Length: 595
Image 1 (cartoon, helix red, strand yellow):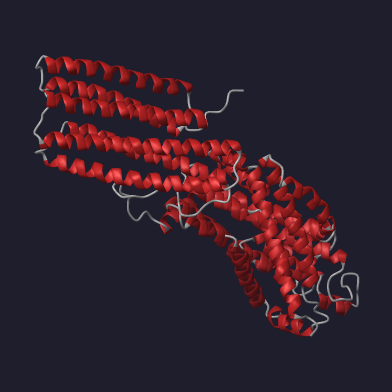
Image 2 (cartoon, one colour; image 1 turned 30 degrees about the vertical axis):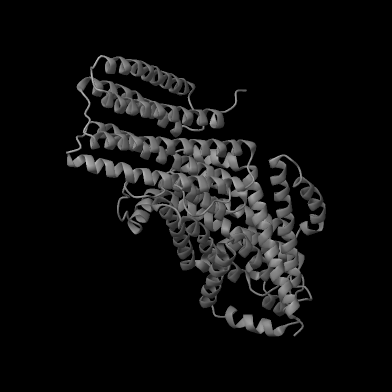
């Protein structure tokens, strides 16, 4: 046997180069179009047809259905799209991924891209050293493109020659002559290979090489590709593990769509493969089912079989076309059938993965930020923005509790309950600040555009100020606790003034929350309102401070009552300052620059 261990290691290295090229090319495209991708998915319409078109577009753009479905999982996790919308995008992604197979098919044999790889590298590598982030990302894309086809070319060089190594031919023959059993075996091989490589495109490339070398016939090549259709679902499943229930349901919907479609095709496998072969014959003039070494040898015809035991260039081109046609026809048919059952899909997925229990607002949990990090920083930023809104809403509940605590007697059992809740919320607030801040710092470690860096800086400032609001709310509770320990009480006039102040603060809080919910497109009117409310709070604090001195001097109430009264008013004024700081963080870091 002439196939050495060196050749086998070289083959593994070639496969690794191909996979690395796919990864670099996909990441480069995602970085170039990251913000656009986020905007396209973020403004996703409710029409399932446009959802399908979006899935096709995104997947064709980034050359990876796994990456696009992971994005969809992330957006569902971030609350940017519903499960129904996500299913439509996933349906489209399965069709969009065929663009990659056509690229590999078109360039693999008819044009030797690897011959021009050095020239493309000469263009791509210098772009990595340019200052503009877009050029760096484009350079990554070109380098990944080169590595992909260099790896594909090397794979074809280092796969064992079956004519020179009949032992391998005999080994494969045992699994290629079992009829429908062979189809199932190679179907399972496709699942395993794709799950390991996490790329259906890599499985397609390997299948293309195997068919061109004469290892397997077209029918078994289709079985591998069909298995790869299920194996590719492993990536979004892994991505959803750290997400919420909606993200897990989205990944399950992807698995369900691919599995059901593959099972249907397996049931009618022979007729379906024959249909695709007939389409290829009609378009190419050559039936891939006739391209087998056995038939070539029997006919004594060498127009399709080369002396080395593989296929000729003509047969290779036709085989590549036919293999690319199979997933195209399969996914398109699957889409046209399944799109009518989108609502049913959602119900089935929700039935398979029901809501076990409602999340308690008293427990620490991050709703949108998971343990995993997306490959595209823009998607991570979106998740963080959503989490900041949840954070602010939790702190808003603290403000309501603090205001209610002011009116609750220390003898009332509810006083202890409210105080304990405020204390627990303050602890949760500290932990949320750390978790969100850590997540933002991880995003900042990646390569970001100047706009992205400004967003991160703005969010870090916003998170810090929200935590200060939480601290201030708990300070109100601690002030009340000290007041009650020395048995100081407020008269009706003082309580009325305190209520007016905290009503102003609550109004500022609601305006701040509205701005956070529209963080990237804040309204000028709401920003102006924030400044006006903070000014009103300051002016009212100043008036109450002067009145407090007058009332103490004129024995309207005693000195201790006046001290605690101003402590609560001063804390309210600080709350107003912190809220304005949050608004300024949104204004300076997220508001688009005027053109």
